[in-house]
Length: 220
Picture (cartoon, rainbow, N blue to C red):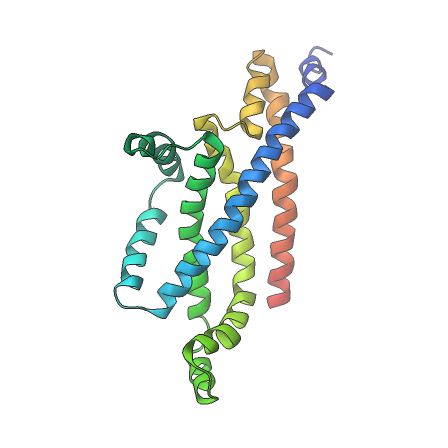
């Protein structure tokens, strides 16, 4: 019974409600970041694929720089450095901004690689049929590439959801942050709190991984 005591004390309706509130923040931050990073990453990836003079090489430098920086550093920069130059954001906005910047760079590379995977003959066939470059990209290249890109994009979204936990360093009131508050009450709370926190992350991420796996099977 002594072993079960911490679990009984932690697994109360009040604590579950507090953890769910934090998980709601986690999902909100992840959802907004996913939408924004998909839009921005898609635009960057497409522009890089188009190989526009000056623009594409500049974007390549920016993307490679961001991809080779730790996400934690980007979070610190967004929340602590930007205010020094007059750009202040509250915690949730800073977390979304940092995640969006980092994930946009990652997704842009997935999208660019997906576009490059389509044989160049498809472009030539589209142009030969009377379509201009933009129409060929929109109606021929993108639909084929998107089918190939969906599994890795979903996998990247899973990584993004897990990466939201890093925002605990700027006190984002997410699932991990609220879990820390609970186990800080007593040292014996650590194991039961982390078990339930890990389980909540696992359920959502495992569901997304099943979606990614099913999409991969459809592509095979």
